[in-house]
Length: 294
Image (cartoon, rainbow, N blue to C red; front, top):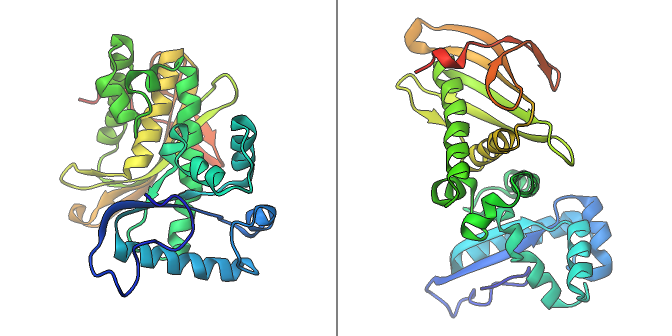
């Protein structure tokens, strides 16, 4: 496994077969981080623009040579904390390698499939934010998520395999809350946001959701994981929270009838009930009763 930003070892004219190994690298996602990381000599690029070009070339070459290419945001503050915690020199290659594959941060890795770097970088930033949210949710649940199977790839695995009946029940209830919101909303294009008041700060998640006429719901797996984790933490810790679904309801089959909707619910830590809420600048009226949705 390659764990750094050096050239893929197996790439070149002498190699005509793809390796089954995985290639893992870290990417500096903005100019400020690039400047902050200069002291560690992570790259020879003279400026951030050149760094991005070289990174795009690196990823393209890795895709040709490795079965799996994954990356994560190389966050200077996180890296400095990692080195301090483990007592390693940030200037050493081993420190960078260890940081990239640090088990508690595996949820921040994103698979690269050849998309433009301009589209890939925002996913890395969001993956870091999502990873921090997952770890926060796990702390709220007294380590019940990670304790189930070590360090899992997603809360989906935690909820399904957890030995603790309370964790299984919480996962099932959280999934049911989101399912009822989407079934009750009907077909359309929406954005869903949820937040719970947790110790250490608010836990939040959001996602764009497409609900097709045939009942199928399209949502990124990582977004569904985050939503489920936040709902789980709220139910497990009996924490108050709010949720908003807003967007365009309707479809072409309904004679092109569309309407803008914004619904909200509030939780006292147990049940989610309709409420009037303004969240991130979106005013929403009371939603439908989730208890009436089957």
